[in-house]
Image (cartoon, rainbow, N blue to C red; front, side, top):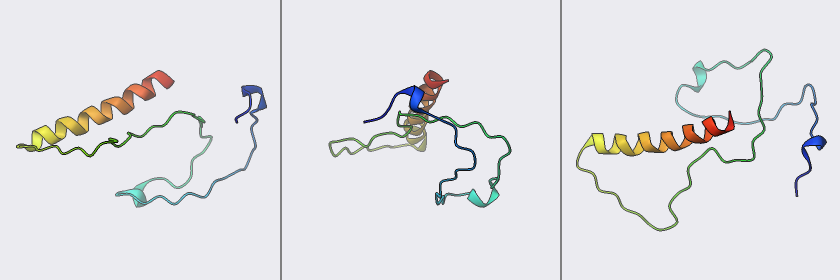
Length: 82
């Protein structure tokens, strides 16, 4: 179980090793000065359907609408956090 908010503390100089691999990663900055961090206990990713689902689309625009709806869900979560 997690602790209380009062149990949180700032530890200067701690880094976590994380391997990132995505398109355009090489172009992203590798260092940040005075970053602001937020530790969240909410998932910022979409859950896969529990049941097998098949979606058939006739147009690329229909696929884009699905992708846009997924991003809207994520942005809504972020708006509630901020």
